[in-house]
Picture 1 (cartoon, one colour):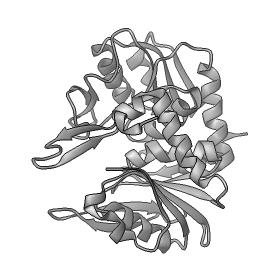
Picture 2 (tube, chains in turn green, yellow; picture 1 turned 90 degrees about the vertical axis):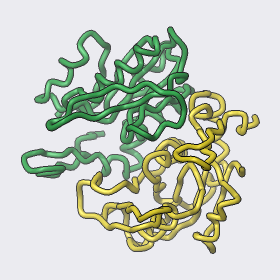
Picture 3 (cartoon, chains in turn brown, purple; picture 1 turned 180 degrees about the vertical axis):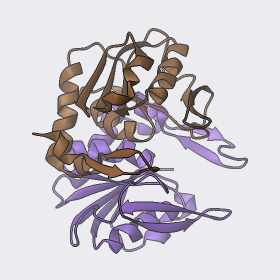
Length: 170
Length: 170
């Protein structure tokens, strides 16, 4: 299956000059969606993993079926103000200004093995903030998985030294 | 398995007087998470369904593993400004003011059979807005599934006449 047939290019979204990669056609196609999740879990099925951490919101779409299929617990990294319990916060830079991500302080225990999941590796900013949150809790990151990597943005530079897998590269 | 052991009550979140139901302990426990998704798909496994529609963001957490396990396509209903292609918008009331949800105008075809999924049935406002979006596209709603229902808020009154299933009732 050529997954790229199900990624739609949207010019000038969210603003002029950006070519947005729309994954909704892939999610909509039951065979493409299942095959993409199955290809991702194939990489990690023999890995020792305690929890899958997914980044809001599209990381939930990739991370929760992986957690279900691999029979692992799922832990959300969320946008500010969404998590109700004690939490840690990490900042990341945007083109103008910055934003934050949060994780519950009791999300997992020190030494737990974590697979971090998101849909897209772009500049790597949100991934790096999530890595920082996981390591603040003492988690051991055994891998970072993405559906799609935008190679020209060099997001891997932000998360050097980690075991990274991307199903598609654009 | 008593799923209620994995729902955490957080008083005064997001504001004073609200008792927030935190589902993160259920997501974190691999057995509880899998059993909850399996209990939901058991209800719909013999139903004729074309697509599962999940409401951002926690509806993604419940809806995408259901889509994966039932081998259906997944369609997101998202918060404003997130969907990149042509879309429809529906408003819903908040305690003060209102907010909006969006769906791609080509999300599915007229007559397609839709299972709508979210984590929580509270006042029913976001559910009703999502029902409106699905019906604007000509979708036939074959069921609406929730992990948890807050009975005192009478959310069912907002979506009368639909086939509703809630795994847990508080």
